[in-house]
Image 1: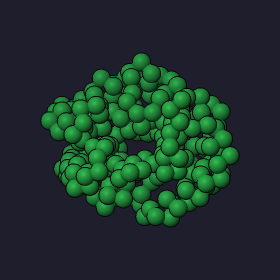
Image 2: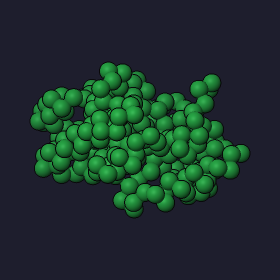
Image 3: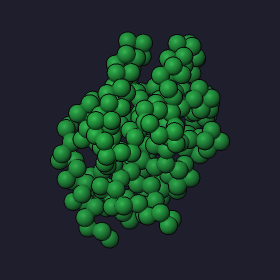
Image 4: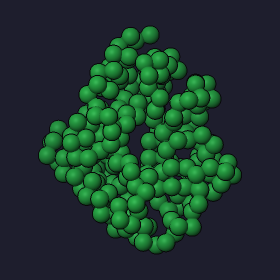
Length: 222
């Protein structure tokens, strides 16, 4: 067991302000590694594959809050609808409607974040500003009783250019602020990962998704 996981976690928690929620990104990590973070007090974990997350949900303590932080395929929603605590990556109305449908089967309201595409990279998913506005103004959200839009999520460009990263986070915060009068229930701005979370927090993030700074580099062989 890597004894540094606990120390890494405590160091990060110490650096975060109280209003910032830490999502420990546990994708590809073993049950033992997750339990080490759990035993150090961490309760919120993020995964990017539904089946992997479901296996961990079944095996690990039930007071863990599981966040789906990756791109979600509609046909996989049913596997997590009974337990997922927050879905970060809602990037289409069709996906939101599927989440609503599956949540209804479990008599739940599933909290969701709209994912916005703020990076210069075309490989990242997310809505652009026009698509988001159209979705919010369409009136469709009011018809979905089993999802609640709690905020926005975005990933900055993977670059050493801190000014560019800052501008992308500032843009997401400006969209969040602009939407607030229309969606007063918004409370979560999920932006910032291991490499850029201090900038994200400076620009208004209150939820950060940190993996490698807690668990070490990802194990790509799994």
